Length: 96
Image (cartoon, rainbow, N blue to C red; front, side, top):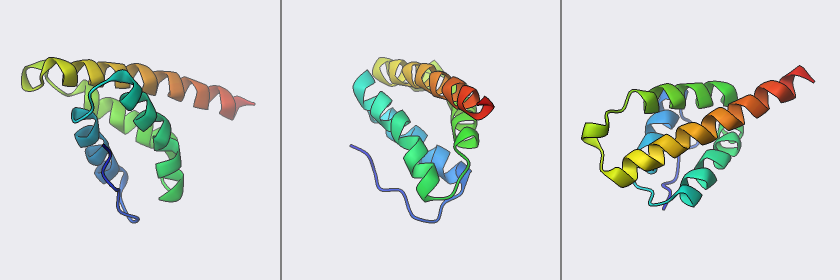
């Protein structure tokens, strides 16, 4: 279940909200849906998508597995895979 994100929000606030949401997800499908929705969320809030992706990636990389249960850890690892894939697509798109 995703939580509503306020209309006016900074990138750091968005990243914090996304980390919180990912921590509550139960499977890869939910993670992928949330990652796919980042582009829409960022666009609506007039935030640069690539910065949202990179800051979220940095935030996730900074998490410790000691502080997470196995489902959370797995979801965060999958989120990194999705983020890197989407960031790669964005870079290719910008070059053309």
